[in-house]
Length: 228
Ligand code: 3PG
Image (tube, rainbow, N blue to C red):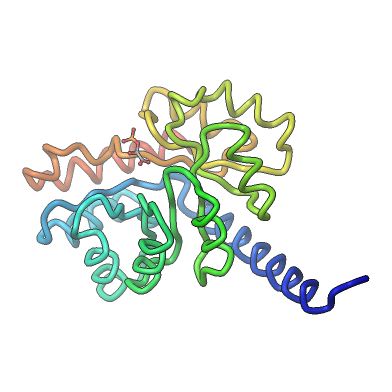
């Protein structure tokens, strides 16, 4: 016998997931490269974001690896509304809720748990869960996810893994991150199941520490040119 309550909930979830996928696709298409950012000093927040934006990187993944992550998200949403700012290194539902409250426009996680994937279904902003195996893709897939971060991409099989995943997961697309650099990024973006790439190679620690913003702008812009 059919259960109208359950089917209404399922339909709502399907509609939400379709909208999440559309939003992920739009932001990845616009971004091409998602810089993975760790903020160590409050004073770096604006100049670092400005340096990336000047190089053409306007969609930013601010990780919660430092205590300043949430603050940086909130500050950038307020003071740089032209940028698209998401939260990265979100490890549980609690961090997801905090990220949304800080104003994150999307959420990225390095891996996936059932609880986090379920929380992502009812999140007002889309979740891009991290996977590194067929089983993790299937866990996300069973809940409706079709877009994933492949992490750590190079260690998880890199371009060869992406090619292999195209067989069983024809309608799944990835943002490979972890170990990407100017020497291998072209190979990644050429894969039909890659929607954008992520990484931190344009954010060398010493450049940030020394306020070498021009260098960050230059490397960001060169990275985008590699994908042109
Ligand atoms: C991540 O969390 O996505 C990675 O730390 C980024 O990987 P990379 O530093 O090797 O680019």
